Structure formats: C-alpha cells, structure tokens
Length: 222
Length: 113
Image 1 (tube, rainbow over the protein chains, first blue to last red):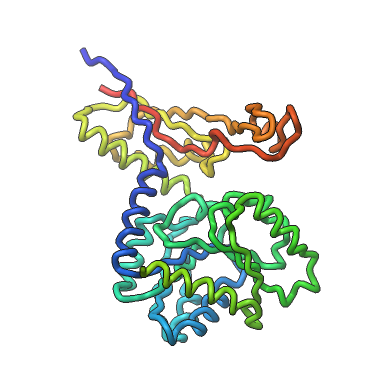
Image 2 (image 1 turned 180 degrees about the vertical axis):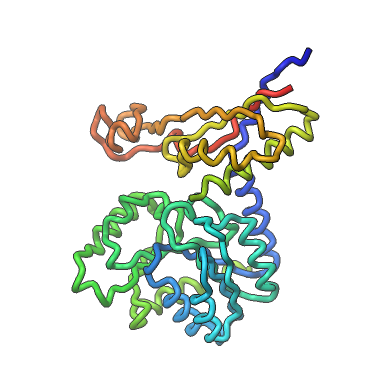
C-alpha cells in the first residue's frame, strides 16, 4: 500500500527568479556592463527619454538598448537610428520581464563590451515591480498627464526604484499635477529615492539625469 | 496576465523536486499566496489545468492558502490587517507601519507518495 506523506517545500516562487537575477548581476559586474531597468506606464515617454539619453552619452560610452514589448518593433527601429545597438524582445503576451528573459535578451544583443544597457521594460506599473531582472539599478518614469496620485495607486513600483523621472514637465501648466505632493508621497514609500523632473521633449532636467546615470555607470565599473 | 507564466515555473519546480526526491505521484500541491501579492488566486486556479496538462502534475489537486496582509504599527506596536483597516492603524490611527506578511507567493508543501 502506498502511504501519502506531506513534504514541506517552503520555496518562494520569486526566489528562483531572485537567484537568477543575482547571478546575472554578478556576471554583469564582472563584465563591467551597467544594466538599467527602466519601467513606466505606456505612453509616459520612455522611448523619447531613451533616445535623448543615448544622444547625451553616446560619445563617452558604448550603449545598447533592449526594447521589451508585447508586440511590434516601432520602438526598436527608432532607437536603431541613433546608432546604438538595439534588440526588440517580444514577451508574447507576458506583462513583465524576468531575469531569465533579460539574460536571453543580453545574449541576443551580444552585450559583451557595452558600458551601458538600457532595458525598456513592458509599459506597466504592476508586475515589472515584482520581478528582479538582474539590473544594476532600477528607474521609472511618471509623466505629468498620468496624475500625481500614481504613487498611491502603485506603491510597490515606487518603492523598488532607485530613481524617479517625472517626465513631460513642459506640460505641467495644463495639468492638475502637484509635483511637491508626488515627492512627498514617494519619499514616504521610499526615503532613498532620487526624484528628477525632466522633459524628454525640451531636454529640461537632463543634465541632472545624465549626471546621475554617468556616475552610476562609473561606480559600477570600479 | 502573468499567472500562467508563473504557474508554469511552479510546475517545473515541483516536477524537478519530485524527480530529485524520487516521488512517483503528487496528490496535492499547496500554494500560499499573500493578500498583497500580484497573483490572483482565482486566476491561478483558472490557468492551472493548462499549466499542468501533460506534466506529472496532471492529476494533482491544487490548494491555495491565503496569507493576510498584516502590519505592525511603528507608533504603538499593534498588529493589524492593512487591507481591512485601509492602511491606518486601528489603535492609534498612525499611517507609519511595517508590513509583516502579505506579499508572499510560496510553494508551501506537496502531498505525495
């Protein structure tokens, strides 16, 4: 007769991903490649921000971009025009990237020798926050038209990122957007977060953002 | 929709675990899901049959235990459920608290032979 037994596993389902992410981070550290995981809602200006960031840094470092989308390659073809190395990742309906998909993307991009790889995560403020991609740092964009209540609605996203870019500040005058309120709400969730107001369209605030990124890339290589 | 992708990972993990431990049949799989986790139990149950189809877990029952979103108040030390109390300590009305549990997504145990 077969006897059933209860076997305790107590394994967090995220821990498998966390282990892969830590391994990937270590590999990237050894290869001196800085991976920035950039997250935001759809339409927040991620691609425009990426384009301007590449323009600002392309003369001083080798840059690669991974565009993760459920479908299409419109973003990748835009980025390719800047001369940066780019690859489009199709998640096939999945709403986030995990560490394994990120690693596959880096392999396909042939990221060895790059100084900076920007991962444009799927436009979504929910699940990308739950999955460590193995990135060196996490950044997110909140754009003015989305509203100043987003930190209240998506607290996890705001608590896992190192830097928050508040984009489209050139449109601030036509929206009811209280930037001080956002800062206050965000600092409550994440006291160490750096908040940088920018306009990817006009370039306002980019000096501070580029300085931050340049310093992080430099620190990563040390 | 990310439940399917995640549950497929769970099935792979359990199959692997079963092989390593020389288990021949898994009767029940027990998951623990926190109230604040981004996994929705109803959706997990809905996509489970598709995820286990053709695997060793094909006839395995799925059981889900919900873990409460409990926090401890930094002001008065009360432990309370964050969702039921709308993120405010019911004792002292403070909004400064630390989450104790509720974000988990765990494979708790399997019943097997």
